[in-house]
Each structure stands twice: as structure tokens, then as C-alpha cells.
Length: 370
Image 1 (cartoon, rainbow, N blue to C red):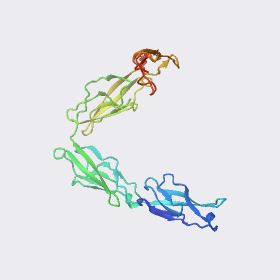
Image 2 (cartoon, helix red, strand yellow):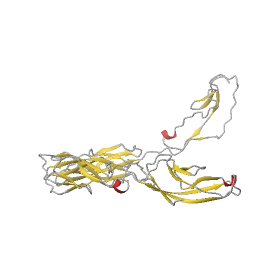
Image 3 (cartoon, rainbow, N blue to C red):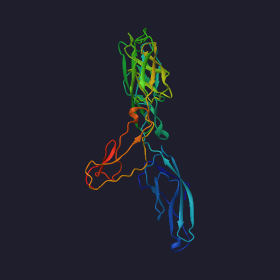
Image 4 (spheres, one colour):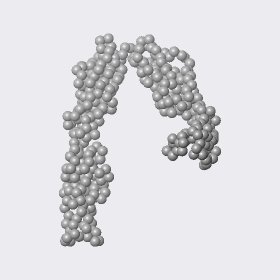
């Protein structure tokens, strides 16, 4: 038996990996042999015919997930005492070009000043291919016909190749293609906006901080406030969080919508002083900062569960009692101080008695004749 076999990762289910052969000198029933995989097949991608010893593929193989299996194969006889022998087999998966390259993201957006120097690097695009060898080697190309930009086929670096002019061409839409050694490909889009020279920074409407109050039970994703600025020569601004947000808030870079990213907790932190920056797309880019003070409002929490005054109640009722006859009255208390949290309602649980009795907010009553 070999120590290692190689199997293509796209092998069909039922494909035979190895035919095991073992011999037992005993005759008759004690010499009959059975085969098994004793360990190493935790995800059940292989199976062995217990009678013939044929090891075959039983599940989907993926080299990018598991590249090698170490199987312990055991053969047993049917004698008494039972005897066995085991051997280890390494199953190495051979790569197939079953993965196309994948860019870090499907679209990219950049701003460039119109006086940017030729040869300036815009961005180094990255596409990854988990396949092995040449199947995983990625080359880059520009599918858009342009003389103004060039793309390095090896490292994916996009750079300026010709003088830019905002007045003649203010926006470029480029299509970048990544191709692996097996001819699988992926594409991404690059938007480049060419900006005029800039001499006015953004201006926020208020020179002082903006203060807002939000309840601590505000749902995640809810809008906290809008903090917009304006710029007389740059209509498009980008917004970012600088400090003070503690990972609790997120800011839309286009709309300046400040939203809740994770849950608030008044007891952990009752206030946040958040610094927000607005940056224009001029050359050089100019920016301005403002502050948003978020005060977290404490919300009473429903901490206590209701408790019955007695664990067990017993009651009697005549079988001739009329409907709506009072059978028993129950009372429970709740330790919460908030009126809404301490309000108690009652209901019957379980199938027994349903249709015969009902409960209102104070007592069990008879519903129909017993």
C-alpha cells in the first residue's frame, strides 16, 4: 500500500482513490476481512467498501478548504480473538482552477487634482485567487480604452499616464480585469473624478458643538443626527469620524448621517464628544471639523420577573356551576419600579382545562359546563 495518493479536487463522487488489498492466512470465517477508515475522515468526504476495500470519494473536495487528509485505514478479520492491522494514508488534493480571481471590492472611487504629475500612483488594486501554482497567479489589464491612465499587469498599480484636465474630462469610468493562469477572470470598476484647484474649506453651519439627546434603547442603525457642511467651490464633501465615537457610532461619508452602530448603555458611558471632519475634493483637499455631543438618556430596564404569592393554588367548583362562575383568584407581584415594566397580565398555560376555564386579569372562571 502506498504512503500517499494524489486526488483531483474536482473528482466525481464515487471515484475510486485506492484499492486496498490485505491477506489473512486463516481459512474460512476467521480469515474473512473487513475494511474501515478508523480516523482522519472527520468531514466524511471519503468512504471505503468494507468488503472489497475500495476507497472512494463520498463528498465534495475543496483543496482551498482542506489540502491534505491523513487517513488511518484498518482491516479486521472475523476470528476470535479478532485481529487487525492499520496503515496511514496521506491523500493530497491536486488543485484545479475552480476559483476565479476576486477583487477586494467590486468598485473603487478616487479624487485626483487636475495638476497631478504624470506617473502618480492612484491605487494598487488587489485581486486574490486561492488556487495553486499558475492557476493562482493574477495579471491585470485595463478593459477601458484610455491614454490617460496605465495599469501595471503584475502588481495592479493604477497610475496617471497623461496630463489631466478637469474642463475636458472631469470623470473617468475605468474597467479593470484580473485574469488567472487558467483564463478565469474578474472585473472591478474604478471611478476617478478630476478636481479643480481648491481655495475654500468646508464650513459647518454652527461654530459651536451640536448637542443631541438619545435614549439608551435607541435601535442599532437609527439616525442620531445630520451634520452637514457646505463648500462654495466643492459641492461634494466627504465626512469621517475622527475621535470620541468609541466604535458606537458610524458616519455615512456622503450624507453625514450619524447613526448608531452598536447598542448604547447609559451605565457604561452616558455621553460622547464626537469629532467629525468634512473634507472637500479640491487640490489640496481642505477640511473642517465640528463636534457633536451625544447625551445618552437612561431608560428604566425590565429587570424583575413577576412572582406569584403562592406556588400552588387549589380550588373547587360544582359541576353544575353556571358559566363565568368565579373559581379562584390569583395575585402576582413585580419588583420593577417602572409602571410599564411592572404591569402584570395573566394567561393559562398548557392544554389542560382550555375550553372549560378561562382567566381574566384577576381570576379563573368557569367557561362552559363540565
